[in-house]
Image (cartoon, rainbow, N blue to C red; front, side):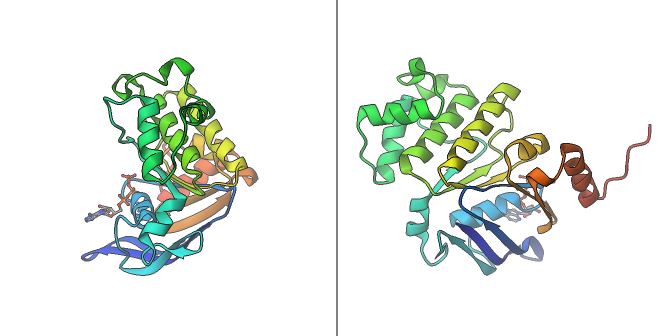
Length: 238
Ligand SMILES: Nc1ncnc2c1ncn2[C@@H]1O[C@H](COP(=O)(O)OP(=O)(O)OP(=O)(O)O)[C@@H](O)[C@H]1O
């Protein structure tokens, strides 16, 4: 579903992404970890076609992103850290608008069905987005992915700033999408959530993917150690 071949992005002398080889299959949740500036957002922006690679290629559903910018977007849903929705429109109206852009004309009942499936409480369906918490807005983002029938979900730090309950709910939603066969790539700083929801975990540093792990094969403390080793942190001695 998601494949990158030697995907590289340079800004002048600086290499933001260095020959990335990545594959996320149907029903997998791949969590990308890494310090600030490691290249996580660059990876997502390349998959979205927001920026052009310096070399290498990215594929969504077997289509080259650069060569098929419109077609690849049809398969994608993207939830950034702060999802942009229309603040003066309701959840139903936003969903109607964004699913319309994706070419879906849905009935009121369908729209509400997707919001319910995304875990939004019924009394919020008609409320303005400006009154929503971040967790509620992220649920609208999931509803958009569901309505669009997205095959690939790209997430950039979607749980940052969410309280543990909202973050846990978001993780459960990702697992629900996984059972529908969605391939998810999530950039995150949250090791705990990566271990909880991820099927695969990649650790990036300075634009390159340094380690790839299968989530069920490691414990949280092993993941933490692998992360710290990759970052070459020394153990803190007090
Ligand atoms: N438009 C740009 N111009 C120049 N350098 C850039 C640009 N965008 C990103 N970079 C550089 O590319 C590198 C990778 O950045 P990127 O945003 O992908 O990191 P990240 O892993 O997402 O970090 P964070 O966790 O802080 O979001 C950084 O060194 C960054 O400064």
